[in-house]
Length: 237
Image: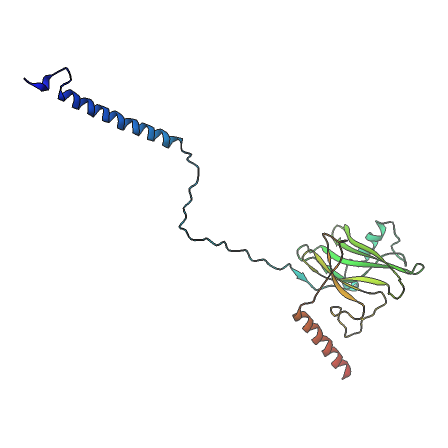
Protein backbone atom coordinates (compact mmCIF):
# COMPACT_ATOMS: atom_id res chain seq x y z
CA UNK A 1 0.00 0.00 0.00
CA UNK A 2 1.19 3.50 -0.91
CA UNK A 3 1.23 5.47 2.39
CA UNK A 4 2.12 8.74 0.61
CA UNK A 5 -1.47 8.99 -0.74
CA UNK A 6 -3.09 8.53 2.72
CA UNK A 7 -5.56 11.42 3.29
CA UNK A 8 -6.14 10.59 6.93
CA UNK A 9 -2.91 11.88 8.50
CA UNK A 10 -0.20 9.94 6.86
CA UNK A 11 3.53 10.90 7.19
CA UNK A 12 3.40 13.25 4.17
CA UNK A 13 0.53 15.29 5.62
CA UNK A 14 2.23 15.59 9.03
CA UNK A 15 5.45 16.89 7.44
CA UNK A 16 3.51 19.48 5.49
CA UNK A 17 1.67 20.62 8.63
CA UNK A 18 4.94 20.99 10.54
CA UNK A 19 6.48 23.15 7.79
CA UNK A 20 3.42 25.39 7.65
CA UNK A 21 3.44 25.80 11.44
CA UNK A 22 7.11 26.73 11.40
CA UNK A 23 6.50 29.32 8.70
CA UNK A 24 3.64 30.81 10.69
CA UNK A 25 5.83 31.04 13.79
CA UNK A 26 8.59 32.80 11.83
CA UNK A 27 6.08 35.22 10.29
CA UNK A 28 4.68 35.93 13.74
CA UNK A 29 8.14 36.71 15.10
CA UNK A 30 8.87 39.03 12.16
CA UNK A 31 5.57 40.86 12.61
CA UNK A 32 6.16 41.37 16.34
CA UNK A 33 9.72 42.55 15.71
CA UNK A 34 8.58 45.02 13.06
CA UNK A 35 5.84 46.36 15.33
CA UNK A 36 8.28 46.84 18.19
CA UNK A 37 10.73 48.65 15.92
CA UNK A 38 8.05 51.03 14.74
CA UNK A 39 7.17 51.93 18.34
CA UNK A 40 10.76 52.90 19.26
CA UNK A 41 11.21 56.68 19.44
CA UNK A 42 13.21 57.73 16.42
CA UNK A 43 14.40 61.08 17.71
CA UNK A 44 15.99 59.92 20.97
CA UNK A 45 19.72 60.53 20.68
CA UNK A 46 22.03 57.68 21.49
CA UNK A 47 25.27 58.12 23.43
CA UNK A 48 28.40 56.05 23.21
CA UNK A 49 31.03 56.03 25.90
CA UNK A 50 34.50 54.60 25.48
CA UNK A 51 35.02 54.61 29.23
CA UNK A 52 37.43 57.52 29.20
CA UNK A 53 36.75 60.66 31.22
CA UNK A 54 36.07 63.65 29.04
CA UNK A 55 37.46 66.91 30.43
CA UNK A 56 35.77 70.18 29.50
CA UNK A 57 38.14 73.03 28.87
CA UNK A 58 37.39 75.97 31.17
CA UNK A 59 36.95 79.36 29.58
CA UNK A 60 39.65 81.86 30.41
CA UNK A 61 38.40 84.51 32.83
CA UNK A 62 39.70 87.88 31.72
CA UNK A 63 40.27 90.69 34.21
CA UNK A 64 37.91 93.66 33.94
CA UNK A 65 39.15 96.51 31.74
CA UNK A 66 41.25 99.02 33.66
CA UNK A 67 41.32 102.76 32.99
CA UNK A 68 43.81 104.92 34.87
CA UNK A 69 43.88 107.96 32.62
CA UNK A 70 41.88 111.07 33.53
CA UNK A 71 41.51 114.67 32.49
CA UNK A 72 41.55 117.77 34.65
CA UNK A 73 38.51 120.06 34.52
CA UNK A 74 40.59 122.56 32.52
CA UNK A 75 41.03 119.96 29.77
CA UNK A 76 37.40 118.79 29.87
CA UNK A 77 35.76 120.69 27.01
CA UNK A 78 32.24 120.25 28.40
CA UNK A 79 33.01 121.27 31.98
CA UNK A 80 30.98 124.50 31.97
CA UNK A 81 27.97 122.93 30.30
CA UNK A 82 28.08 119.89 32.60
CA UNK A 83 28.20 122.09 35.71
CA UNK A 84 25.33 124.25 34.46
CA UNK A 85 23.15 121.22 33.67
CA UNK A 86 23.85 119.41 36.95
CA UNK A 87 23.14 122.50 39.07
CA UNK A 88 20.15 123.85 37.11
CA UNK A 89 18.29 120.52 37.00
CA UNK A 90 18.56 120.32 40.79
CA UNK A 91 17.41 123.87 41.37
CA UNK A 92 20.85 125.00 42.49
CA UNK A 93 22.59 128.19 41.36
CA UNK A 94 24.90 127.65 38.39
CA UNK A 95 27.56 129.89 39.92
CA UNK A 96 28.70 130.98 43.33
CA UNK A 97 29.87 129.15 46.45
CA UNK A 98 26.75 126.99 46.80
CA UNK A 99 26.94 125.48 43.32
CA UNK A 100 28.59 122.15 42.57
CA UNK A 101 31.99 122.37 40.93
CA UNK A 102 33.70 119.55 39.04
CA UNK A 103 37.07 118.53 40.51
CA UNK A 104 39.79 116.41 38.95
CA UNK A 105 39.68 113.89 37.41
CA UNK A 106 37.33 113.28 34.54
CA UNK A 107 37.37 109.67 33.29
CA UNK A 108 36.06 108.49 29.90
CA UNK A 109 34.21 105.17 29.77
CA UNK A 110 36.13 102.38 27.98
CA UNK A 111 33.25 101.45 25.64
CA UNK A 112 30.84 104.40 25.64
CA UNK A 113 33.01 107.28 24.51
CA UNK A 114 30.34 109.89 25.26
CA UNK A 115 30.22 108.93 28.96
CA UNK A 116 32.32 110.71 31.60
CA UNK A 117 32.75 110.00 35.29
CA UNK A 118 33.69 112.75 37.73
CA UNK A 119 33.04 114.16 41.19
CA UNK A 120 31.77 117.56 42.29
CA UNK A 121 32.53 119.42 45.49
CA UNK A 122 30.60 122.15 47.31
CA UNK A 123 32.03 123.60 50.50
CA UNK A 124 29.57 125.21 52.94
CA UNK A 125 31.64 127.61 55.01
CA UNK A 126 28.83 128.48 57.41
CA UNK A 127 28.21 124.88 58.44
CA UNK A 128 31.79 123.79 57.80
CA UNK A 129 30.82 120.81 55.66
CA UNK A 130 31.56 119.63 52.14
CA UNK A 131 29.01 118.06 49.81
CA UNK A 132 30.40 115.60 47.24
CA UNK A 133 28.59 114.01 44.31
CA UNK A 134 29.96 111.33 41.97
CA UNK A 135 28.40 111.44 38.52
CA UNK A 136 28.01 109.52 35.28
CA UNK A 137 27.48 112.14 32.58
CA UNK A 138 26.64 111.90 28.86
CA UNK A 139 28.35 114.73 26.96
CA UNK A 140 25.98 114.36 23.97
CA UNK A 141 22.59 114.20 25.68
CA UNK A 142 23.58 116.12 28.85
CA UNK A 143 21.83 113.43 30.87
CA UNK A 144 23.41 112.58 34.22
CA UNK A 145 23.11 109.94 36.90
CA UNK A 146 24.44 110.59 40.38
CA UNK A 147 26.16 107.39 41.35
CA UNK A 148 26.97 108.45 44.91
CA UNK A 149 26.68 111.41 47.24
CA UNK A 150 27.99 112.21 50.70
CA UNK A 151 28.31 115.23 52.96
CA UNK A 152 31.54 115.34 54.94
CA UNK A 153 31.31 117.26 58.19
CA UNK A 154 34.12 118.58 60.30
CA UNK A 155 34.61 116.25 63.24
CA UNK A 156 36.95 116.91 66.10
CA UNK A 157 40.42 115.97 64.96
CA UNK A 158 39.20 114.85 61.51
CA UNK A 159 39.65 117.02 58.42
CA UNK A 160 36.94 117.69 55.88
CA UNK A 161 37.26 115.38 52.89
CA UNK A 162 36.61 115.39 49.18
CA UNK A 163 36.59 112.77 46.42
CA UNK A 164 38.42 112.58 43.09
CA UNK A 165 37.66 110.06 40.32
CA UNK A 166 40.96 108.67 39.02
CA UNK A 167 39.95 105.64 36.98
CA UNK A 168 37.60 102.76 36.35
CA UNK A 169 37.96 99.00 36.71
CA UNK A 170 34.99 97.10 35.33
CA UNK A 171 31.95 98.31 37.25
CA UNK A 172 34.12 99.97 39.91
CA UNK A 173 35.29 103.56 39.99
CA UNK A 174 38.75 104.18 41.41
CA UNK A 175 38.51 107.07 43.86
CA UNK A 176 40.97 109.15 45.83
CA UNK A 177 39.48 110.30 49.14
CA UNK A 178 41.63 113.06 50.57
CA UNK A 179 41.46 116.03 52.96
CA UNK A 180 39.73 118.99 51.33
CA UNK A 181 42.66 121.30 51.91
CA UNK A 182 45.36 118.86 50.85
CA UNK A 183 47.53 120.16 48.02
CA UNK A 184 49.86 117.96 46.02
CA UNK A 185 53.41 119.04 45.34
CA UNK A 186 54.73 119.25 41.76
CA UNK A 187 56.41 115.85 42.09
CA UNK A 188 53.66 114.06 44.06
CA UNK A 189 51.50 111.35 42.48
CA UNK A 190 47.78 110.95 43.11
CA UNK A 191 48.38 107.21 42.85
CA UNK A 192 50.58 107.25 45.96
CA UNK A 193 48.33 108.84 48.59
CA UNK A 194 49.93 111.15 51.12
CA UNK A 195 48.93 111.59 54.76
CA UNK A 196 45.27 110.73 55.39
CA UNK A 197 44.38 110.25 51.72
CA UNK A 198 43.42 106.78 50.47
CA UNK A 199 42.59 104.95 47.26
CA UNK A 200 39.28 103.06 47.24
CA UNK A 201 36.88 101.32 44.87
CA UNK A 202 33.24 102.33 44.49
CA UNK A 203 31.00 99.58 43.12
CA UNK A 204 28.46 101.36 40.92
CA UNK A 205 26.03 98.44 41.30
CA UNK A 206 26.09 98.83 45.10
CA UNK A 207 27.32 102.37 45.63
CA UNK A 208 26.21 102.63 49.24
CA UNK A 209 27.44 99.20 50.23
CA UNK A 210 30.76 100.67 51.38
CA UNK A 211 34.12 101.29 49.76
CA UNK A 212 36.75 98.62 49.30
CA UNK A 213 40.48 99.39 49.31
CA UNK A 214 42.26 99.70 45.98
CA UNK A 215 45.77 98.34 45.67
CA UNK A 216 47.96 99.71 42.93
CA UNK A 217 49.76 97.05 40.91
CA UNK A 218 53.45 96.63 41.67
CA UNK A 219 54.32 97.61 38.11
CA UNK A 220 52.34 100.85 38.30
CA UNK A 221 53.66 101.58 41.78
CA UNK A 222 57.26 101.28 40.58
CA UNK A 223 56.52 103.56 37.62
CA UNK A 224 54.99 106.23 39.84
CA UNK A 225 57.83 106.01 42.36
CA UNK A 226 60.39 106.29 39.56
CA UNK A 227 58.65 109.34 38.10
CA UNK A 228 58.50 111.02 41.49
CA UNK A 229 62.20 110.38 42.08
CA UNK A 230 63.16 111.67 38.64
CA UNK A 231 61.09 114.80 39.22
CA UNK A 232 62.75 115.52 42.55
CA UNK A 233 66.21 114.97 41.15
CA UNK A 234 65.51 117.40 38.32
CA UNK A 235 64.33 120.00 40.82
CA UNK A 236 67.60 119.70 42.76
CA UNK A 237 69.70 120.42 39.70
